Length: 309
Length: 309
Image (tube, rainbow over all chains, first blue to last red; front, side):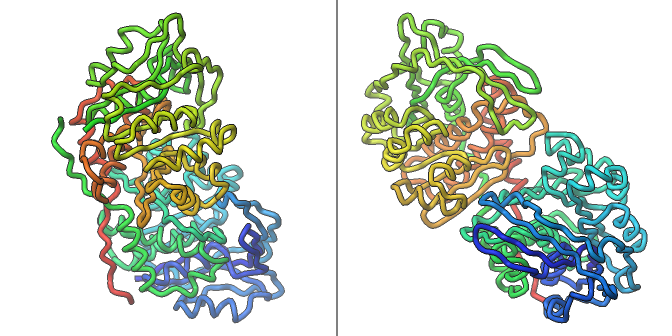
């Protein structure tokens, strides 16, 4: 089993009410890879510049992530994002974006990356997502993330990309915006009408919800007292979710899907406890499983109705 | 077992994107009473004017609610609220409020209402909540709701009222505003430091969370495709939650608290499906229990981690 992820590899400069960091390792493909690495073999595809060093590569390789498809562009600069958060940690404010080598990114996957059973198309231009999808014909589970920029500037290519995947993973506000449907349950059904058999709505601190053809499942977020930097939480969720599903092989049954939602929630919760990749890069599988058990304890109840009066 | 609720009895004129109604029966005490009536004996305390008719009383009495402490004020006008919602059904826009008989409300509880084991102080002036609390010294479980108006204009009386109850039931934004603490888990702990042993954070469509001294439990909202009018959802939640707890008697254990959160979620979900009290007034206990089983199916997972790789 293996997971391939195509997305951004970045330097992030982030300020929150709880501190700030300059040029941390970040990017959707990085957060995803680290989270997925607790469950399965991960191959990461994306471009970096000459400013990207062995130190950054080592963060991925220490977690066993296969980095052979990270393309180092001579003379190029790695994607850079600077942003900040106020006390409302649900809203990222972008202060600066430099695309660098990402501007001319044309994904070329090695045979190994192309052969993965699971593929995550992280938040990049929808046309590129379609190109990557076309290179991975054997993938059994393909999921896609996106953002408001593409919903507003590349809606048709995004809808075309969505039609070719099994699973859409978006924030609930993005699902509403994309479908122009304020009711989330209806909006998810609209997306499934385009092709995907699963829609995951990420809800920030409120957790996540999974819509399938004949079902619904939702988990709250963990009640964290120390949230320092939410950057990458959504990609860590996707990494936990898809990494676990990949590790189970075959067509996931309902129990595996639900446990995958749990692992996604857990990885996202670790992600936000420290800046950038700090927490997830230092995590152990034992901590992951222990927190899944905590989440389980916090969400289960016995539905044995008493007799009606 | 019996529950007493003190709060508003109102006429509501409501417009949402899905329709509008003039002068429906409403008010916090009404929504609470109808929801709680599925589980226990309910006594409602509040003032009405001469415009309040037998037709309105009958809605409560058909559900077995004890209405003897509804005080009809000669020459008075019943509390009136006019409001509307846009597609974001989480935000109520108030267009008109006429306090009417509510302006001079001085709660006088009959011996029967005073003797209830469970007391809900719905969203009224905190000083009145304290007066009512003082009349019900034998209540084993006292819960309180409030709103941004009192947080902003009567913060100290509200904190004093909170110090004398067992359970605070507020929207999560109100909990943050009241404690000036953006982190909900910390904010809930701050409130428990004032006296209450439970804090329920209502989260609109995202469900609700329960904080206790040594625990946390949360449920998502049900994925409703038809939400017509959210007015009263929070009070219906409180009615399901406290009504069920009252029916169980004694000190609620963790299993009862969690099932109560489920019943609160279920009653709130029915409340919003139609305007005003329309849906809950016509509901059966069988429908309530069936939906609790649905909620159970939508939220449970098996946390059996696979061996680490």
